[in-house]
Image 1: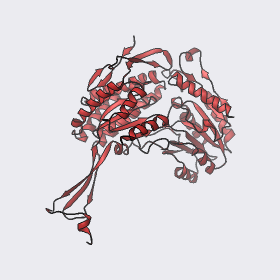
Image 2: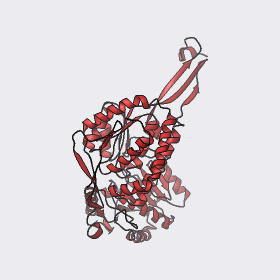
Image 3: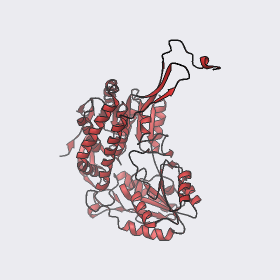
Image 4: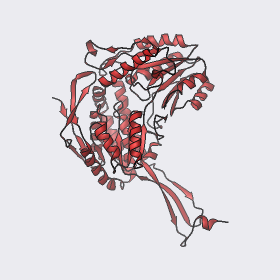
Length: 497
């Protein structure tokens, strides 16, 4: 019998007030029910926000280095459970064990990084323009953070958001994706075990419409961090804007890997195989477009087909699997629809293009790694996010054209160029419109201590990861201390001096 899971509110595991539940299933074997989870509503969000609001008044007074010490213990606990967490994550969202171990490791890295930032929430001291006066600016916590996360990195992305929020002195109401509720539950269990006080972290399971939007619109939620689709991100920005709520949006991508005529082709092949088909293409940074210089186009395509044929599609828990299932039936249908859209527009399926069924693929949401050629920049498969194992290939004749094609999308998250020409490399760095540019590596591979995010419709300007995320979860207070013993009127008293 499947295990029953609960919400975590004010330090206690509780059912949804309605008593309703939903099932969590294995996308590699949909017959396997992993557990039942609360199907929560606004009433449950209200309880979580109430607990978080009360806890904030205590948590904000805990010294930031001590808040960091708790997160260091979180990192230790995650390290001890790394393999167990990875296996449970693969069962509920499908990607291979190599990748889920990496997902957990990214959470561990983020825990240790955030722990050190508890001693580095630096402010500024600057000279005053008046005598016997001291000026400084310092970081302050904001309040209750609403955290809404996706299913494709169910440990890494929540830690990117929750750990900095906690170090800065905020409390959290956390809504994970309904496709990956168990990994989220493990994370909250670890936070509680590490010593996070009651009410500081609250977990509410359920759908985006019922729970996510209740978080966004709640008057006692002070800031919202969301990772997901651009369409939902725009709706969140619209709703949050009514109350001028602070919002960080990490949205879609249509990332391109450029391979120039002088590139190390073997290295570029390794990069595109990993970037396009790792996580079954279900990454916001996945390589969705391959832009090839005409001089190496035919040769590289032959290498690419040979490489893709070696990829084994199957259960991510099995040794030797390279590509797991899509996360659910609906996502596989999206992939199939885009393959049809591409061929209807004139693209050709060079390899793959079909769902996999029968044998080990019978009970899961599997799809062949797919290569589309004869793709032009105006096609939908060259402009729209697919979020699956589909790679659109385009041909160019110059570095200028390659960058123009790379920029020809409403998104601007990640980008890549393979070249041994330093001029090409620095031109790409300067001219590609993306928040991340890799030279001689694929479009995936972000590190926890570096800023992560994009431009255009990939987000609203904030960054996750690194030192920059602490800007979002804190706000500046400017302080003036006048010890002159008399009224000093700033610019009035400095005029003419």
